[in-house]
Structures are given as C-alpha cells and as structure tokens.
Amino acid sequence: MDISLITLLDLVGTFAFAISGALAASYKRLDIFGVLVVAFVTALGGGTLRDLLMGQQPVGWMLNTEYLLIVLFGAVFAYLFRRTLESLRRTLFVFDAMGLAVFTILGMEKALGLGLSPVIAIMMGILSAVFGGVIRDILCNEIPLIFRQEIYATACLAGGILYWGLEKYLPSLYLVPITILFILILRVVAVRYHLHLPTFKGEQESI
Image 1 (cartoon, rainbow, N blue to C red):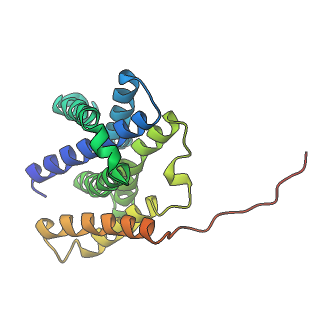
Image 2 (spheres, helix red, strand yellow):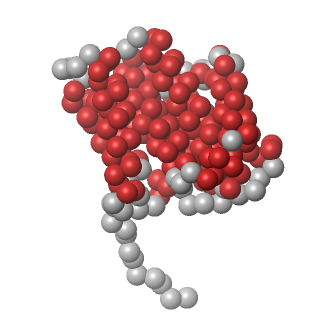
C-alpha cells in the first residue's frame, strides 16, 4: 500500500477512536483531564501494544506528534459538539465501528510489511483495533465489548480473513476500502439484528 494511504488511514482511525473515547468519558461525567486520558488510550492504546509486540520502538505516536494533535482535536471536537453528538443515537457506536474497521486493516498492513505471516498479521490487526477500546471500557467501569456477546473482535477476524483471501487478486486501492467497508457493515448488521456469539454458562458453585 502507498505510504500516504497508510498515514491517512492511521489518522482517520485515530480521530474516530479519540472521539469514541471522549464521548464514552463524557457519558461517565469525567472531568476534562479524564476525557483527554480516555481519548488518548482509546486512540493509541492498540497501536502502542502492536508496535511493542512487533519490536517497533519508539512506537509510532512518539515519532509523529501529529497523532497527539489528532487525539486532542478529536477530544475537543467531541466536547464542542457533544450536545449535537449526544442527540444522535448510536454516535459512540458509529465512531467506534469506524475505528475498529480502519485499525484492523492498518495493523495487518504493518505486520505484513514486516514480513510476518498472515495469521500473525490478522492477530496484530485485531489487537490494533480492540485493545484501545478494552482500556477505554475498563477506565469507564464497563465490561469491555470484546468480552461480551457482541460481534466485535469477530468482525475484525472476518475482515482480516477476507483481506488475506483477496490480497492476491485485488490491488490495495480496492482491497483496503472493500475490507474496511465489510468490517463496518458486519458490525452494524450484528448490532442492528442483535447477532451475537453464544455465552459460556457454567454451573455456579455454592459457597
């Protein structure tokens, strides 16, 4: 993929996740510092862990301060337009789904660019997409979506497999938007029609 497209995807995903984190923090009535912290970890947490696991040090946002500016801009945007955004149903979900789709493919691209196997690349894509949201939910005292019934990480997995299957047949110019759109649609459809994974129900032990 062309480096400019990678950068564009990274910035778009960072902005979307920053808004998602800021909105989640505002729903919990956190102060402005708390909003900024949650926006930061939501936007950059997954990519930070991915880069550390792949031996990329310093991690990406430490080398490019524009990522910090994007997070700040996303948090300020969410603050300034919070009433408008809160009046729109599922706003948090939309931005979270956008970030999920973008970072899955971005993580895969970076892993494949380092010569890692497709299986590891899919794992890095999933980690990039969901780990920031895990930290966000924990800080906001919520059970992370990845541990609930929702089609969340599963959407990333399906998108990663699709990307892997089509990589030899389509140029990146078409492959990237197709797989991003696939993940986004899968996530939206799963929520719209209440599709979910089965739960594991064990016997509760008596004390």
